[in-house]
Image 1 (cartoon, rainbow, N blue to C red):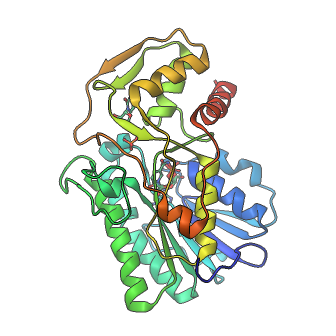
Image 2: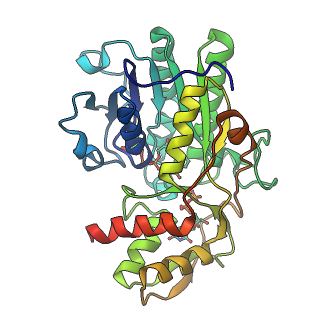
Image 3: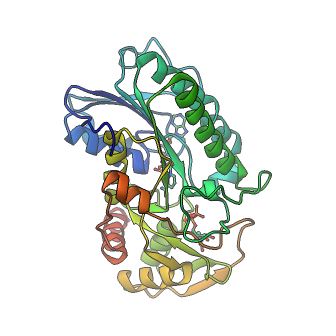
Length: 324
Ligand code: NAD
Ligand code: UDP
């Protein structure tokens, strides 16, 4: 581990996409450490509700703005210097790739460049939320950070994959050319409370269907795999990366790899639902398998996920059931 420091009391941190699923949990963790946090969000896929519990928090500010537009300098909350800028704004569900492709491209390109410029001006540490999608439909398994990936540059997922790959390239260019302090985390499938029930991703979809007693819509044969990570584990990894001074990229997730058929069956069992598991057509370029090589995260960050899939899914089901 290099240059270890703790971001918390006395530090001002900008979190883009702060009203989203993962970033709102990150905001909670940063506030709990004593940091002052400004979240910027345009609510395209996030919700004010995810940070409603922070409305009266003295160290939290929520700014409604599109980070792909020039950041509104007149907003006082954005005027002072930031110690860290964490760029987490981006729609992330494959359903979004078809519905808001240009917005995804912009937030993973124009917005990234603007935020890197702001980090440079502020001498802030810049953390990029990248993704396992950078590996595309991987030909190497599990995926180490040294693998360059197998991405279809013109396919239906490319607006997301290539925007994140551009963001990584931009982040590394600012690091090499300007000496900017940066960290890149490649996030693998993460789930938990505050996901939107209708966001189209497998876990919220299956849980919502199971709670309503509707057929579970597994794509294809359901033999494709993902390795699922409970959000609290991921957030611990991200905060460790922030503190570490490491550049990365560093994978973050778990090795709990399972087929989508197993995932569907587990959710039906845990909800006690009468839903049937059904099979529907699968989208193009859907990755066959995905599991992170966590060696770097373990070695450089001391990262170890602690929440198993059944426990994490139970907590997520409780959240969705409580809101049904
Ligand atoms: P999310 O949609 O819940 O959160 C994204 C947030 O960004 C939302 O609140 C959205 O309104 C906001 N946003 C999007 N475009 C914006 C813009 N132009 N200006 C301001 N705000 C904007 O999704 P999430 O799953 O929490 O993902 C958060 C980040 O983590 C994303 O960058 C995503 O690519 C990355 N990631 C997530 C996963 C996962 O499994 N959840 C996996 C890999 C990477
Ligand atoms: N999936 C599915 N049914 C759904 C939604 C998703 O079978 O209703 C599958 C999807 O085809 C993919 C896997 O679940 O193989 C994970 O999809 P998700 O959208 O959650 O994440 P990503 O594809 O980004 O890994």
